[in-house]
Length: 231
Image (cartoon, rainbow, N blue to C red; front, side, top):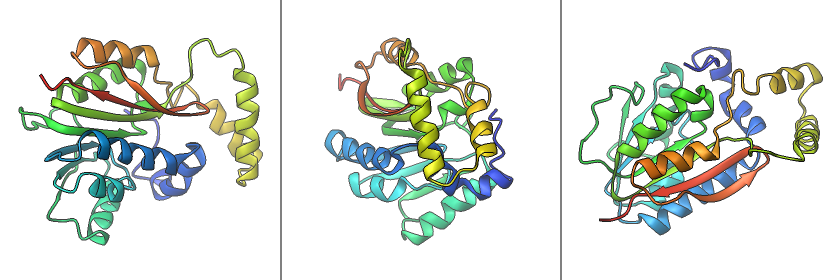
């Protein structure tokens, strides 16, 4: 379970907080949608795991115009944000929202043409990250793609301290006060857990998928695309 309260104050300020905490947040959503438009433009069934406020939904609807979307969001407050986003896009005929997690969801055994998971796995400790990643990869139909973004500290990062200083400067420039800044940084690998690139590679191989493609790295955040062979 996440140490962040998505049904409380954190959830109410979610849109503002995630834009502070995720560098290049809009670029992640834009590039992710573009990758799926290139790889799975004729997708019919798409799974979105933990959409939060569903800010990725406009780009996904455009990238895969034939697709129907299943959204799994366990938080009640976030699910309401999803409903509002679906209504604002007039996408009710294409979107089915379930207020639940991926575990025990009883999804279509034939799989999905695309699975999308933005900024979720870093809310889980490493063992749960592995389980969730394996579960998402198992949902891919032949030729299907997993689009994944997460907080991820590169292994053996020699200039980690320099990057941390840049992150601090960015957050100060965006108006974060010093007390909140220290609280934010102290949560690394305690509340928000780094997703190891090695784990992504191992799980892709174990699931019979192609090696992950790194689409974007912005400080300690990454965007990957993993595809299952068509045969």
